[in-house]
Picture 1 (cartoon, rainbow, N blue to C red):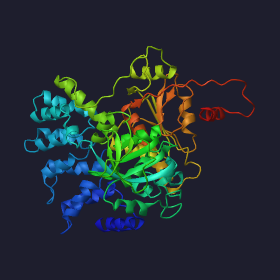
Picture 2: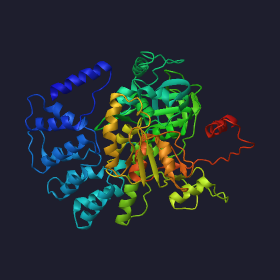
Picture 3: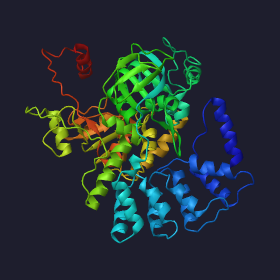
Picture 4: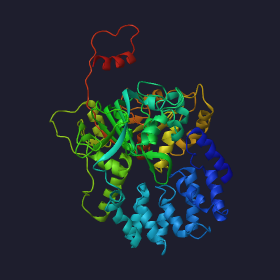
Length: 557
């Protein structure tokens, strides 16, 4: 296994990327090596088990959790892994297959403190929260510690705060950056493989950008040269992230400009994105990934400049000077908490966990977090869209600019982003959908599938259906057409296509991370947009379609 893996590492290095995460078969072989480790390989084996296995409910994580549980309970022995070390590793797996073993170990006299520590920083508890609550109410001291830790928001407060000053080197792309520039459609097959797919970012030459290989590999040498200045890079553009709702575009940017996530292979978070205008869906996917997106005038920021960003003061200066290059206002102060929590989704889940624990313990509302501020009531009525979203939130209506979490009745996923949505669902430890309808289609790759598409056609349907979703077959048709047949007038939903629009009901398209969150939890975070009234006058001319009318709206505006 080690020989094959090292050969794989060499092959990937020749392509300029890191090795793939371990799969279930490799982890099973790794487990056997732990029982009888080859001399001199001990540290390498530990590194593979701790850092090269995907978290959540990935098949490889299932094998890893089973082995660590067996070691912790004394059912399996390893000369290089103690029971205490096994419990510590279980505590790094984020959720899913590690949860029940950790809860069981709260009753273990020696290992309970380590199990409690691991659970205290685990957010993806879902219904297992009640198991911890029951143990606490039955008198288990360590379960009580876990509940108290959640209530105190230790998972959040133990993470570093957003720095008062962030020093970065500018990587600037002038003009408009479309998500297809960052995640090209012809390379959709590689999107789940973030390091490999990132090589295609900005692969086509444009003013100020020189790809390593025009049309094949993006400006990796330029990126590496800029990093030699010793600071992280910030993606800067005049207009950033328009076009399709591709989480893969964010993944590519952050692969070069984000930070490694401990115990999570081949994925990065954090980073900074500055744009004169940042498209709403791209802004959201940046938020979800723990990045700091800021809309600001970038006219005075040039490729290679070293700048200091002061997020609390709302200004950007030339590094080491008082020369102000631009001033800005954060979209919301909650962004500060999102960055600290590692992303908007971890913040929402963790904040909910803290609120739930405090309610159980009879404690008042937590003041640790920056909460979305309510929008002033104008006294006017609500538009139809505001009423629909209001109903999904259990209120009469939602004012523009209000943060809300409407219930998602319908969630759609198509095949070029479906494999990424699957990975996001694994990361969320999702074993069952909460949305009423979650549908997967294969409308983009059915006609001319690549070998990797054929593999997706065979594996993705079972993944979706095992969680209570509906999977179409290749050739069944387009996701939008299917969803449109199943809507009700008050349907609120989302889909992994920027043009997911419902003829009745209302949709809020999103990247694969948010689509996965909506499917898993049945709700979706939303900053309610403005409602715009559009009137068409006259007679519909021959040959003019509804699509033409839609295209006329931004043209006229």
